[in-house]
Length: 351
Ligand SMILES: [Zn+2]
Image (cartoon, rainbow, N blue to C red):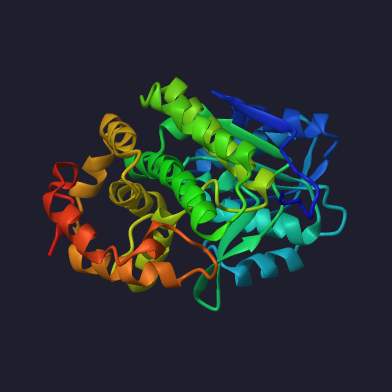
């Protein structure tokens, strides 16, 4: 039985509801944090930042530094870490996925409590133990600390642009194929599976699937599901519950595509394709993608069939000791056939 080598960190504060943004100050005050640093996405609507800052002011919490984050890089994270003033008691990450990945890493370096306040749900990174950052221009997943608190204002996230919603849905359905790959890896290579993490991950997709609607309740379900997936990663000490061959395909596209698409959009399409290779989960994935309008986000800007086939060849070489369906055989001819003939993918690919 695999054993964990580090203590389990799980956010103690979780607020997922409309208006939660305006209560951020209350949550920090309750936790005893009086001096905080805010790391915010460049280009975030000023009205949202004003609401967060007003909520801190109402509780007498001092904002001892406020920095903008414009790129998710290791270099930016370390530069920001060097500027964290002494006496800082907590770091707040506010905005989109990039700013939150950086803020999480800064808090990890500083050894400080971290509060994640996403304004969209484009991936599961707002509550996961890793930060996806570039280092010297190459994207890497770096070990970081889980947030100590997660504040999701569902009303704010509901108003985020369509592609961010689809992207979050794509990153969630990925769990269907990630868990199947984990089990394949167990049978082929003896990769240990943490059953509880696999169960948790699987259960989250079912929760959202039961009601894949874009309204306040749908946003709440998506946020909860993505958060529990991050926790499944922390529980297993591995990215396996959240990421399998569909993520490898997306990483391959990030390196070879002329114009990579947002993470969750690539991952969502890859999940559907990979489910066909695995011979499992296809209907489940298709029903969520259809119900959420996900395919509209793809057909509006179709993908390159040539680049995707190249990605299928590259993907299994990207991560050492990470067996997936793509390592089981040369999948290129099957994928070529799926991309050309599967009715779900009509209009998604061009030559
Ligand atoms: Zn992902």
